[in-house]
Length: 195
Image (cartoon, rainbow, N blue to C red; front, side, top):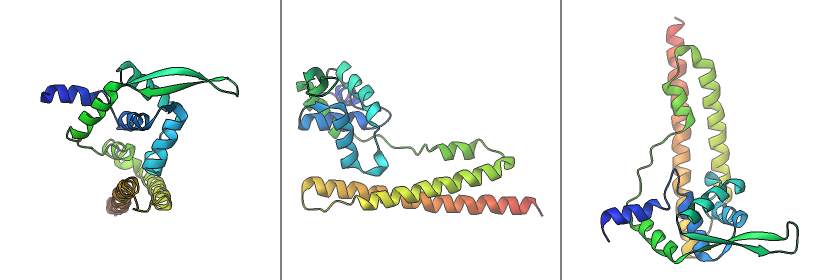
């Protein structure tokens, strides 16, 4: 297969985030409904990667439009008496494989706080410091949630989940350190201006 064809196939499951690929991988494990797809992604990826159940349906529709997933209404006992169940297609196996062998996209940090800093002025200092402190609190909460979901390395899945959570933990701690550095630097500039 040519590199261009690999890129095109891999792009079927890529997007702004790897949620499409994660959803497809869940469906390759077996057919299920949308809320379960989101729940299984969240369980495997941890608190730092929360997929809202209501948003998973957009991802599933995109996968269906790409021919990687098919859906069918299945009767259930409780109202509304049916559930849409999603199935991976034969093309899904190939798309997932191509996604796995395609070099990962470089992830550029695009946190909202970085844009706020880039487009602020010295008059925005109180708001920036408040936002940075709120960001620090959110990061610390995420570190706690990540630690609470640590998975023992007793299986392949446990090992890869543990490795992922370790990477997340290191990135979150580095971001907390950067927030402290940013606050100190901004406070230093403010102190110089008041002299």
